[in-house]
Length: 139
Image (cartoon, rainbow, N blue to C red; front, top):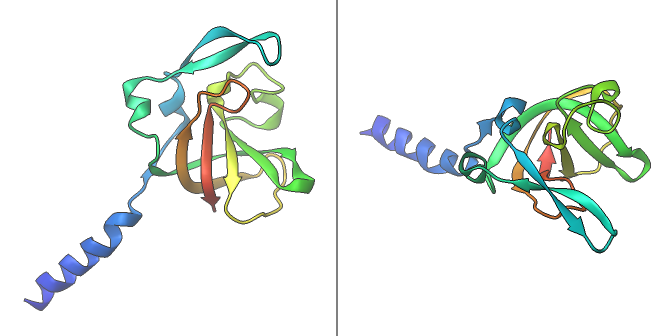
């Protein structure tokens, strides 16, 4: 009976902390369509979410990638499937290979550090922002 109570206790209090480890291949199926953005008077890419990707929205996940400093002084970073020299900003990679880090605690990181973060995945359709964001991200 004590064993059953212990198992129930563990399941009850760890269920809320469940998370999935994602790989960048999860996002390879993300497609984009070009739309005109009147605010910037330019054509931009808007994500077209698959049903599989929609299932991850709002879920706590872990993902490993390369740190890309957007504004290191103000603690703004992205996480990329590729190092800086090959990332979305500098190389031939697509926007599905990078996500914005919304850090729970402001930390200092070095570009190209390989780090695993845990946070809540947010799928973002705003063409002026990253299509993928990891909210409340922690190491």
